[in-house]
Amino acid sequence: MNTNNWAYLDAPTGVAGDMLLAALFDQGLPEEVVLEPLKSFGLGAAFRLQICKSSSAGMRGTRLNVELLEASPPHRLWRDLRPQLEAAPWPDQLRAKVLAVFGLLAQAEGWVHGLPPEKVHFHEVGAIDALVDVVGVCAGLLHFKVDHLFASAPPAGHGEVISAHGPLPVPVPAVLEIAKQRQIPLASSAGFPAGELTTPTGIALMSVWVKQFCAPPAHIPGSVGIGLGQRTLDRPNLLRLWQPLKQDLSSQDSINQPEAASETLLVQQCQVDDMDGESIAFLQEQLRDAGALEVFSQSIQMKKGRPGVLITCLARPDLAKELRAIWWQHCSSLGLRERLEPRWVLSRESVCLDSPWGPVLAKQAQGRVKVEADELARLARAHGLSWHQLRAALAAP
Image 1 (spheres, helix red, strand yellow):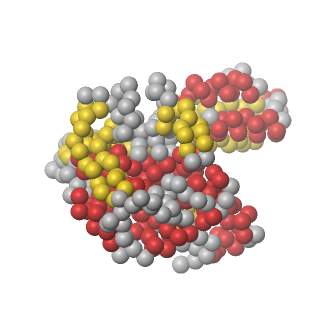
Image 2: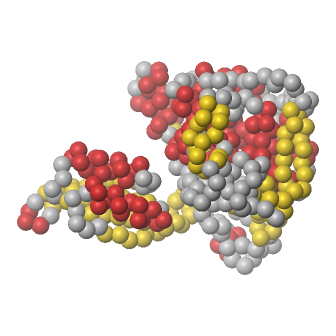
Image 3: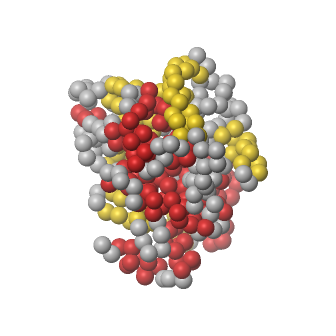
């Protein structure tokens, strides 16, 4: 990896595909970089890009609108769109990224509707503006040679939105499902006006491109792009995308980003000898539902020779108070140990693998590819195959 080719995505008011593409245009992306792959895909006469300099609550930026030129653009199912994308005359890297984004959207929508992805009618995936956003953002990031994207946690919003299925709660189901599957942190939406801040397309793009949700590394800022959202909020509705100055020598760490990154975790622990297995399992479930990254238990020997259980919870430090309340409510212990610990995490990315049963989501790190456990479970249920059979088939070259 060329470790100086990183970028940072700051999303204080959420993420949508058009905002991210607008930020790339604001950063100086040539329009033809987006138009050429879409023309070669057969969409040249289907839309027109409206790119304009504008402002939101007094802050400047670029706003993007996709004007549809077809009176009744066709709706595409994933089973129809996927082979079209696979056959698109694009560079391999662009094709792989676009397929990964749409594959994730299809998987999330399928899960939400309780159907296999290929049988779901996609309002999000089939829309021309979604194709413009996904292809354009992927082409733009590749144009700027971004190979490592950091980002802040986006707020998803709250309240409800009107959809083709009627009123939906915010976060909309597909956003919540992608955040759950990909373990994407969602920032608090407290204080925001009711409404959707992060869209399915926006969070799918983040899931495929973002390597780590964190503060930016030490650097001297270089090119900056600001994309404006369509909604009027009580604050500037924007996201910022920037890359470091290429000649930045201020920090050896910022130039030589390691393959493994350090982050700080909250560790909460207590030991009990008067809870049964069912109540311990319920406590662990409640902690996970509240945002814990992992909860596990170990058998231990306690005072007076009594057998006991050590329960450990790992989480982001900002969740300490919320998780503490769950311990007090569902655990018999009168005390709780807490500490902060550093951990190292290998750089990884989400990939979409081909399989005889359709697209399969996996993680890739240091050349190793591991299929998601949820994916194996889904395929096992859908096709009546054993876990061992699926793992062996998906591990084959």
